[in-house]
Amino acid sequence: MAAAAPGLAVGKPSQDGKRGHAVTNDPSTMTAPLRDIPPVHRFTTDPVVAAYAPLLGPGTVRACVQAVLEREREARANGCRPRSFEQLRSAVLEELARAHSAGLLRVINGTGVLVHTNFGRAPLAAAALREATKMGTGYTNLEYDLVAGARGNRYDRVAAQLCELSGAEAALVVNNCAAAVLLVLDTFARDREVVVSRGELIEIGGGFRLPDVLAKSGARLVEVGTTNKTYLHDYRNAWTERTAIFMRSHPSNYRVVGFTAAVATKDLAALAHELHVLAFEDLGSGALVDLAAFGLEHEPTVAEEVAAGMDVVAVSGDKMLGGPQCGILCGRREVIDRLKRNPLLRALRVDKLTLAALSATLRLYLEPGRLGDIPLYAMLGTPVAALRERAARICATLAGAESRCGLRCEPCDSEATTGGGTLPLSHIPSAGIAVRAAALSPDELARRLRNRRPPLVCRVEEAHIIIDLRTVLPEEDAQVAAALHTVTADTGGDAA
Ligand SMILES: *Cc1c(COP(=O)(O)O)cnc(C)c1O
Image 1: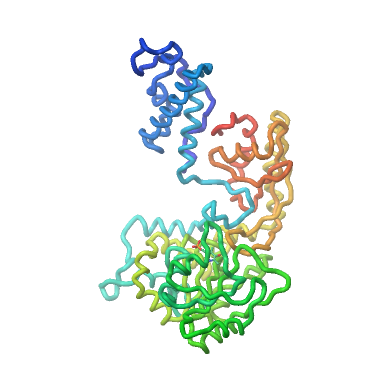
Image 2: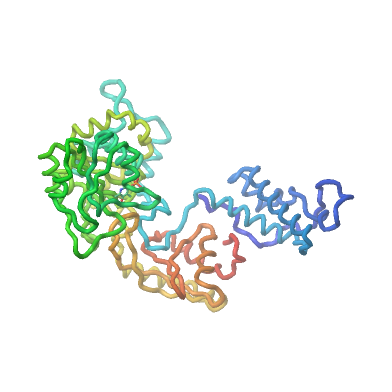
């Protein structure tokens, strides 16, 4: 939707090329060039400029024009050569495109990183969006028990599905996985101790540091083991009557390899129960299915961790689960019940649209043969040969443009990754398009593709850029071709 009309014509001359007259200040005191600066309305009435008004608001459009004119005024006062109306108009359109890209835009992800936090993580299944639309356009029984005709519980809406998929007795959904971790720590470990292996004291993207979240919750962190080795007796030795939780955190974005030792989940859970402390796992990515079926390394699933005895497991909804942003807690009934009684839950709760999208996504796991309807799994399941074919088709449409613009596009093999703090070592065989331009550096090429509408983000290598097609939706191929068609013709601003 964001690819609406404006910004499509930077650099193109306007219909109206007449010069305007400055209406600022007292003309008699101004030097001639200053007086020649076109008035604001000459820009705001330009149809391409005006098309931004419904997107940004007329005030912002006016401010962008004024900013450009102010810079021009200063430049002229400093003796710079005056820019023409057309040049100023191009500058205004660039300014507007910049302001517009500060909003939320649909982006083509050519990086090959499937779950990219910068790009909003998992694309949602069509069924999830249909359900969100259906629930969002009317009233729902979000917190209403239709059988009793009385207030109900919003968290029960997806609990049955989550229990089915995880084998847990109960489940709860909050705003995101960080919120889930905070809720568990606040509920069970405020002013008490949480034992964590040194190898799992992680920072994930965006500054989520486990020790900081622990501190915020009022829990005290007790580190055990070393970076590469932690044994069961390390946990036992760390136990005191102040210990509330043995916490395991999934080292999501890195891996300690080589000379390592970690405690098996079932051993840690058994020791926790022997010592009457809570066994809690922050699983992060949250695979509900075995990723080995997609040629990836095995990632512990929620069901496996619950079966191994963890009292409660936290995962993200929008990583490998492929759903909306949320944090999912699966665990024993009494643990989940205590979490539900924490007043903090009110501040971490999810809305009806999230619950609708999550529920529809979980249904795709429950119905046999529907996993491929989740975009992430469709992408993961696409054979490399199919990606190569798409690359060849896109390149074929560019044959003419190549010689004209000094652009060279070739199908190439590539490696995609799951990203998003999941499977740091996984490399998924992939294919895409290698692009080089005679007159442009790979960085400049990438910049121009980013600044188009819709923006296309790619991988920059030493001599060329790569557009990895595993993360490009098949219906976006035409837009990729269009982007490459015009990229060498761009003025560097926003164009199509
Ligand atoms: C991603 C991740 C989180 C944070 O999840 P959000 O849903 O972004 O809040 C927490 N812990 C681990 C291990 C993660 O991988």
